[in-house]
Length: 220
Ligand SMILES: *Cc1c(COP(=O)(O)O)cnc(C)c1O
Image 1 (cartoon, helix red, strand yellow):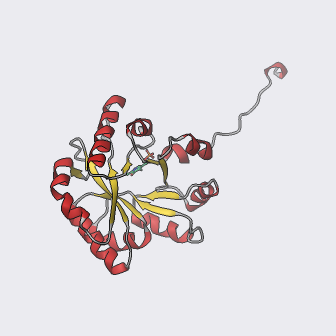
Image 2 (cartoon, rainbow, N blue to C red):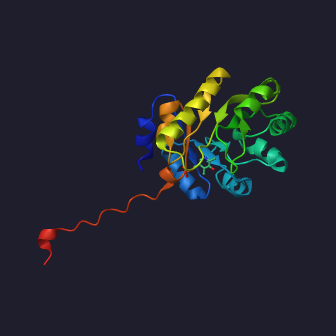
Image 3 (cartoon, rainbow, N blue to C red):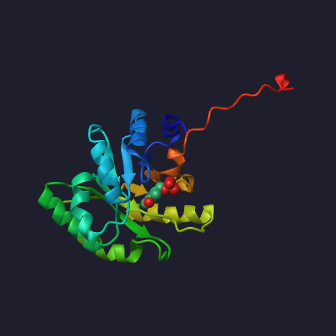
């Protein structure tokens, strides 16, 4: 896809996070040359060697989007500017503590589940409201938004209403950002008020092969 054209076609206020999990550093470099600076990774072990290899490209802002185990927090805090996947108060506290020790202040998105989905982690909205005061008082983090993933099997309309719930809750909590929408549902997320769409497959899909031009008049 034409990345520059795609980015320009997004409504104002919607930013593209290029999800580079499973992609080699060389492909990330190509996207950086097209002006993409925000990249998302979901597995620390996979990300670290790539971050190292791309160390010369200090324009890149790395976002951590995968489920984050407590023993990986320090490395994530050191290498990533934004964490989209804060799924418990315990994790948020640990991130804040370690960020303090490392002299960092990561931006956090709180992952919320708006439907029962045993495959996904996250707060349900009721727990989040109960723990909200504790969360925003953490000293070394900047809570900027909510993140959600729509469970598989929903219709487009159902996804859109789920994304709307996320936007409404973010507004209620006075958070600017909603990280929602992936390759299969980003349009509904944008309609519902996403500020970050997280696209992997759609933007890394290999370029179309040059069309083989066959002049049928010359075929015998
Ligand atoms: C992989 C992943 C994406 C991107 O998914 P695509 O369908 O490839 O666009 C977005 N968000 C999260 C949390 C992911 O793990």
